[in-house]
Image 1 (cartoon, helix red, strand yellow):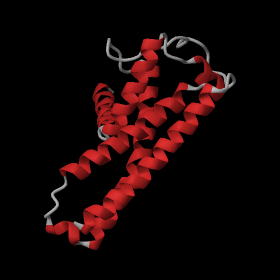
Image 2 (cartoon, one colour; image 1 turned 60 degrees about the horizontal axis):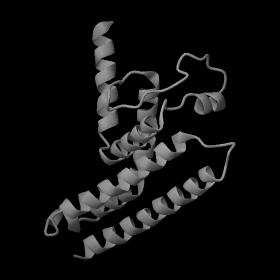
Image 3 (cartoon, one colour; image 1 turned 60 degrees about the vertical axis):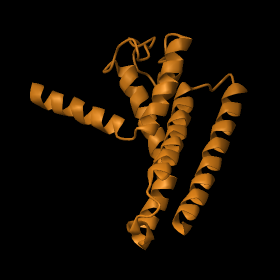
Image 4 (cartoon, helix red, strand yellow; image 1 turned 90 degrees about the vertical axis):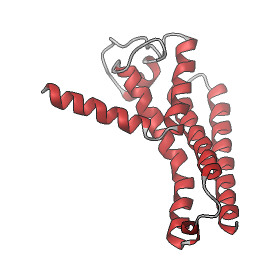
Length: 169
């Protein structure tokens, strides 16, 4: 029981940090006409997805498992609680790039405008390559959450793309 309480405290700390960072990012984006990148919102959706997945993992963890008493297991669990939201954010941005590149298309995925423009700078890229509609922006944020929640979704998709390209060559 002591192990679960310690992990619950760590999870609470991570949750507060992610919620605070999300709130600050939302305030900055809402009050800035110069910088309103959807990529930040997608990243934050991925971190929130990572936190939600951590809650799910802790809920499913058997409290009577003897492996939970091992110090190495507890350290790994604690590290997982702190790192997985940020990994979720990174995967969410990677998923946004996959959508923007056109590698994954369909009704459930966001469509982008200005995909045919010439690349000039990273700022212009982030400022011009935006979802075509508000519905597409909502889809990008939702998929950012999914990428953070289901951490293996993006790596598995990238593995599938690379294996298909290797076979084609």
